[in-house]
Length: 250
Image (cartoon, rainbow, N blue to C red; front, side, top):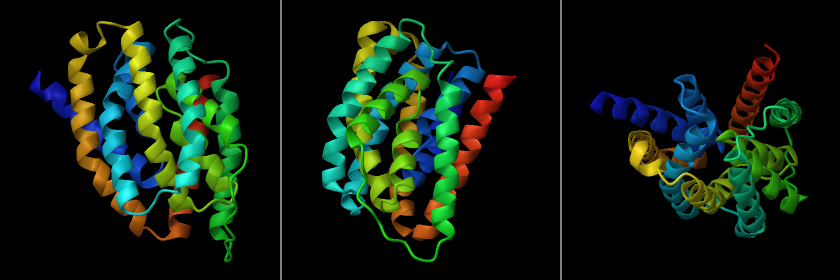
């Protein structure tokens, strides 16, 4: 029992370090691990989001305290993200895993990742105001619940690809993620009443690892050079997208 929790703590720590520093991949990496050991998709996503309620709270507060959050962007993503997340959680509990649409989402993210890398190698960066925030938040929340992760990859990637300040994008998306995750977790718990009692080891392990890593990751985001941060985001999202497309084809 103890060893099992330690494994989940390690997974939560690594996933949150990536997510807090680069604005994505906590849910994707945690969910991938849980699915690989045979956890059903709905239980895996529900467990990840239950743990994320606490990790995203610490992460969001850390980003706020370090000045990484654009408050206007935060507020405009909040409501559509929450509503999209609730809808996605409801759809997933009906055993619809979104397997048909995932490759198309990954193809979109692959293009956005390449665009981010292109921006990273440019010498001059003129930051722009992000567009289409309401549909972006709703779509990000929906696929976050469906796939156990997706809020960061979809929302952060799109914002940075549009030319928004990467540190502000990452910080704002991480701060908003608490509310999106809280709504998704509540929907999952209502739909799966035995979630906490039967799968507490997964939730507690991911929670502990993520909470420990959250302030460290936010600090790393603050200190990393902007161009390096953009390059890392681009490489990560391209890698994850290619992996998803490949798995959908084999």
